[in-house]
Length: 180
Image (cartoon, rainbow, N blue to C red):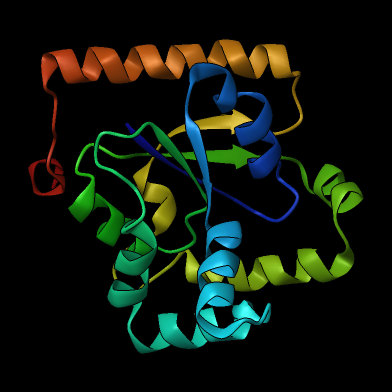
């Protein structure tokens, strides 16, 4: 099972992966960590962020497929994190049953966890969530609160997995065109 996660800076995406999802046997695939490793192997350097942004602008499909090439189709993965509808569409091509979840946390709490600079970056992130004809958040199938207890989010994640199992057993696969 492939689960992508999204949310604003300081929402608690990585914390959620490490404290909730990891209890269910999912491997955490941190895009940030994996890109650093890949880039360092190729160049010997740590300054991967500008390189990644340049590659993504040039060819989002190629760089996203490169990142996904290290993930097996039968692996249980939580992908930390998805930031654009284009990226999500590419993920869905390789993993058609992938699910996208969002971590939502109030502004004041996110601000305590990060810096004002990160909150400013959220303006850019929200822009990335939108393309000409799509918004990443329309693909979210489940949302979690980044400020509730770990125990509650574990229960909610169990409900999410039940939802997936029920959905798969009924083979409900509604195409967007069917909803229009």
